[in-house]
Image (cartoon, rainbow, N blue to C red):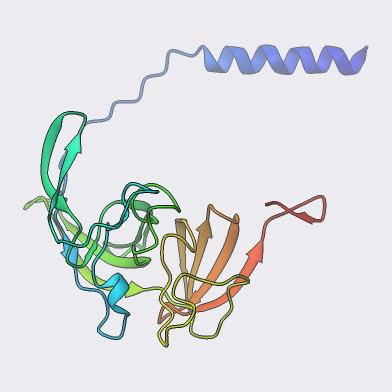
Length: 216
């Protein structure tokens, strides 16, 4: 009975705190824009397959090879962009980490919405800064992620290539934690915890465990 009473009292106190009328004012001071059409070249040593991207946006349909031949649509409205892209799109970011010096590390999501249509989307992370007065994003550095030492526990899309760059059909990267010797990155597909060195090379893959068994 004493345990029940204490639990009830704790619940009442929590409810009182949630009902508090305390207000927190937030005012938008500025914002920065990274243009949607920010397309960068894949590394020179990357296979031709990822020198262009967004060739398979509709799984099950034939590849589209002609650059810019498919207008981008949002509902029935044209977006002003067209696929496939000559290069790799930088947007959109799925995670960001403030570095305390005015810069941030961020990462591009796995590609175009799913594993099935992102096999030509190269995985990459970005060192960025914001100019709040100008409203712009300064991309200081981009690192393309790769698996040259065959650490991934499965065949990657570019398995037979020399450079073995990783794509959105290999991992779906969602979060980033820079450390002294590289980066820890969270993946949604495994789900896995991934360790990369400062060059973006995969060093380790850790499975998610529940009751001592891998979650798949």
